[in-house]
Length: 212
Image (tube, rainbow, N blue to C red; front, side, top):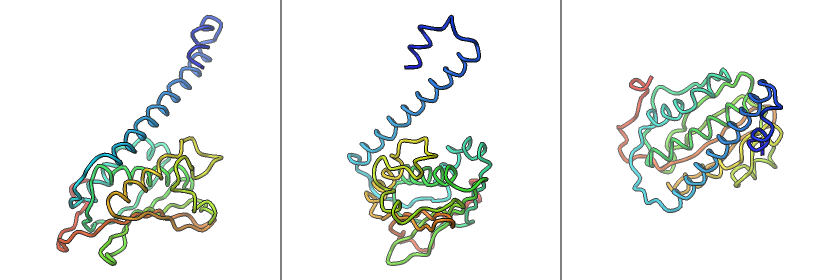
């Protein structure tokens, strides 16, 4: 690999070439770390017993955006969110992972610059549907059928990931009693959604006033 090559030929390489190879090594190490983290998350989803609780969606989304700060800034992405949220039943750490996946995909595969709209649909049949809409090029009907399969990536040409993200989303939401899906037309962007059981406390809603 690059590390062995660098070790064996260090004296023959220019400073610039060494820096280039070190950067590649760091990037590959980060990718492997991400894969390990996601595989551990998958294992946790299978084994961990969770009791669904009311999720403060504003706070959960804020946590996801904080984790993506560097990505948001480097892509000059704009994310539009509602002022108030309904309260749904779930497990906040897992729901944060769902938001991280949907937002990061919207940024990577959205327009340039990316503009994402985040929102929800009013309760229907006891469920609330949350979604992320991007300004990308859209996804064909054929590819939509495969998106939530393991190791499938949104855009094979542009993708730098390993295709675990959306399969993790599906497993998380299914464990929490909800569903996932995508609505898209080529040339018109995409809307990725997930549903969760609505909270029985109809008067409770989360706001963004405390997480700006």
